[in-house]
Length: 273
Ligand SMILES: Nc1ncnc2c1ncn2[C@@H]1O[C@H](COP(=O)(O)OP(=O)(O)OP(=O)(O)O)[C@@H](O)[C@H]1O
Ligand SMILES: [Mg+2]
Image 1 (spheres, rainbow, N blue to C red):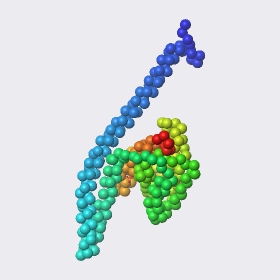
Image 2 (image 1 turned 180 degrees about the horizontal axis):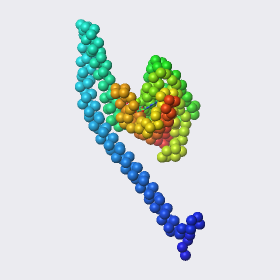
Image 3 (image 1 turned 30 degrees about the vertical axis):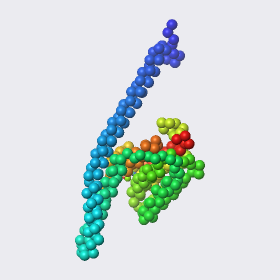
Image 4 (image 1 turned 90 degrees about the horizontal axis):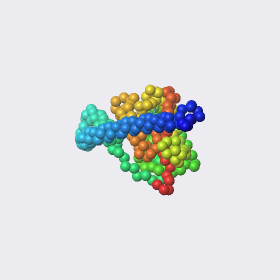
């Protein structure tokens, strides 16, 4: 006698097959997603090598040009007109050097040295660098760190690189001033390892916000809405890479005209690590 399932009257063997088929479809979907992610990673790795080679080839003569310019600028016999022109060349060369350095940083896969890190200390050190800009651009800073925060399992210097990029963007989004709120609270992961102890850092600005049709693209390398020379579109790609290396998560919520919040989740330090 064939057993029948109570809900729909389909024979139990058919029900089994149906369930297995559904599982197979799901597994296939996951495989496609993983394969696409692998291809993306491979493309990025090739692109990274190419970028590193080009940055290196351009960076070396640029450094030499900057050195010679600096020597020329030290000549006391220069007319003020020539001095001014040299200053402009020097500033532009410096800018090119910074772009090259950004590209090299992006292309290099960082090797992390993970240790127990106090997130408030790490955040405060990053924020410290920007205090003069906050002042100049009328940005009010407020920090809120939960007293029961666990230590994070992190590389503080690498993390600061990620924070710097997020803070930099917040500053760009508030050219006429605003409020920057940086907070950290304990939060369990809802990601791959569910209920893993961790820390959620929020960096909130009251700036221009991100149009909803751009939200998907902001983490992609070379996506920028800034003018040429103002942005390379690498800041968030670098931040996201650093967070992924920490087995963390970076996400964003934004409302055009209201502001933006970046959420950065990091795993807590665990004695067994
Ligand atoms: N806090 C923010 N407020 C508004 N827009 C933002 C914010 N953060 C990022 N964006 C948007 O995301 C884009 C990508 O940011 P990302 O940091 O990757 O590159 P960038 O700032 O344009 O250039 P780079 O960081 O390389 O100098 C920005 O051009 C901007 O449009
Ligand atoms: Mg940026």
